[in-house]
Image (cartoon, rainbow, N blue to C red):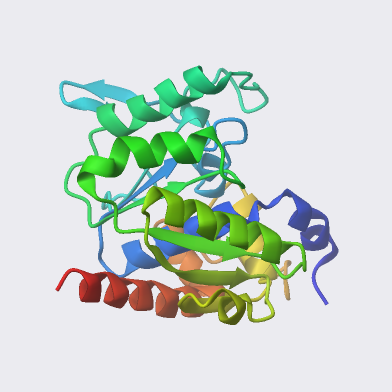
Length: 259
């Protein structure tokens, strides 16, 4: 039984974005240099999940410098959330302006030498997806990870996502069934990367302001343990073990396709 506050917060966690964040944290913990580009322009949640709300983007001669979530600068993030006056500001843009913003993010951010660039997209197959795929075509992106939830309607959504990837020539690297799941990968005949149950400690971590405090829903009154950064704090969540396996599986698949 989860802590009552956690139950109330579950609805506020964006499940696709939480998987993006966990993949990034797992890869960074394994020593990779990772960038997370949040192109959900109308609902940018990655800065909040990484504890970076209120941070400023700095301009260097090579372009915009991403905001880093750790002192080692293994995990960087770029989001329109850093450009808004406050967290409650809305983005009311038509397609062309969205496309221009995404292209600017992809062209003008100085990531440095990255091992992975994870692009977090909104649900569906909209302008954001097309803009990203079209601009990245010449760099031949490795592929897409499909993330789904257990609801039956997710099957139709996943089919559309896979159809989109097929039409634009984007390989499907695999599927993650978030919040448990019921074997959608078998129905879709695509690689299965892993199944992630609900972890109340993860929900607390993504919602709390100080990401260096280790969450403990079983004993919220216990003395607080702290870490150096969210990369280390995440390792205290049970889901970190699952995403460590998922990220290693993903890395192996990418290595195999490049041989």
